[in-house]
View 1 (cartoon, one colour):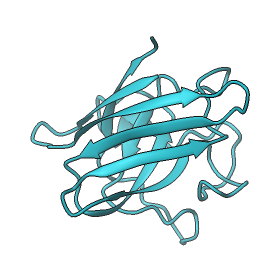
View 2 (cartoon, rainbow, N blue to C red):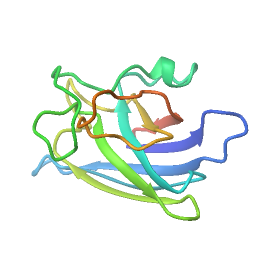
View 3 (spheres, rainbow, N blue to C red):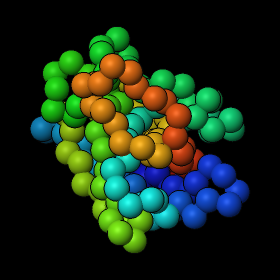
Length: 146
């Protein structure tokens, strides 16, 4: 699948594309792409439950969590399926993304297709803090299933 990215606000400079490819033999899904227009630094990066971006983060719902687990880091066994950690934007506001993950899937009842990809304004505490702030910048996601 392909996600074409644009910032949620009309004046947002956030743009990019993500490519999702799942290897049927290993089960790993690779996420590759680039997002520009971000503030330099770390940004939480997640798959949210719903693909509806009409009301920003409020309409994308929580992190995609079909197994009802606790928030965690991508390397943790106990984590939401949608917990993909942080991405690093360089001094020019560009994040080059390469993630290889066993929990996100492009097939079956827990597929991520049709859901929203969200890049948060701040870094993710990876489930290690006392609370998690769901506010941030959402990215509109258009899926190409071809």
